[in-house]
Image (cartoon, rainbow, N blue to C red; front, side, top):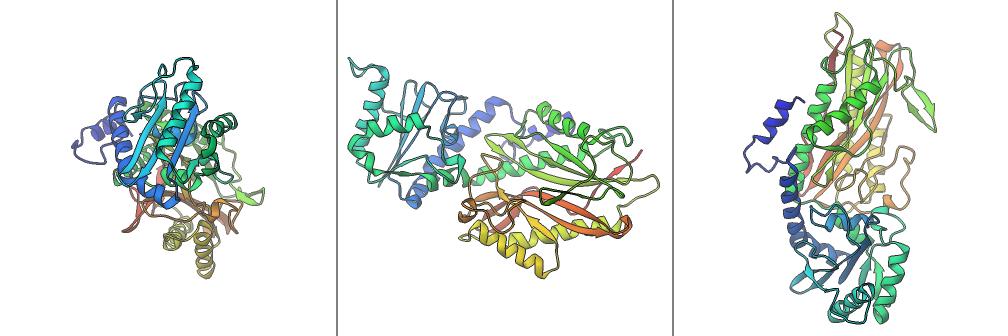
Length: 445
């Protein structure tokens, strides 16, 4: 994507909900704070009711933040400050959001003044203020972020847990895991956030298109590793971050797939020079506005004189698209991740497709909170995370692969791996900026 193309994104109608990447930092902060207000008002009451939690305590210390805490802070807070305690009380009137913090926390109701208790240290006064809030709220259940299944929901440190339980006194026996609430908060997306993810996926696709072009690749000179670093640098130049190091891999005739740890991987080194006839695959993800993407796309390097990819490679991509269809058909609210996986794999087996499914939620985190739909090395179900249910208004990285012999490569097995953002709403499954249905053609000269 050129600088002028990035500028055109910014020149869109400001009323367009997809005008979200790339944005200047100040505008990003305004968008994120607006989303936080909407989420607290529109989503949190229902999520607390679903989890059966009356009061949610989210706390952490500077540079040791609960992953959930970071999603609740104002956009201009890049970390917690000293000890930051956020309390959410569910009542008939909605949710009261209060901060027991040394500094004001955005729109949160301040529930503590450090000098309000003469004779107590600041730490003692803070815990006393938390206890007073809980006394007044009189919750039946108090949710805290401890979870054996999801790291995202296990952010309450050992020290903070001990101090919190001591401060709660007689209320300590009401403490329960807030796993379901924390996962729901991280998992469910506003319509505006889904619109932003459309734009973010579009930007990723544009960057990949440019990476798979003579502007970046000089066939016979450029390595796959060169392209991976170019993608990461391009994201930085455009004002977005990568949440993991991009990877670019090659498959080619005469270099069969290698068997490693029970799976098949490309047999060409990652630092190999890109050659005519190569199948080029990338795996990239960007982060912006507190959200992430996860994308894989495939290209074919045209040998001199050729104008199309071998029919066998195009057929493999078409089978990959079919595997996507079977997986999205199985993605139904109420099913667990393992049930979606089993249904998709059964349908693939009936269709004679050799493939694996390892899809996952994506949103605040690239490998997000919510139901795991397989892992590359766990195709019979994922203990723990695979038992989580599918909910509406969530976003997934539809990640999978198929394996097929390619006649033009003397029957050599090719692994066609695809990954595409999708949103699951009441209207069904929606591809975020559409999926790849044709190989990107890369000229040799």
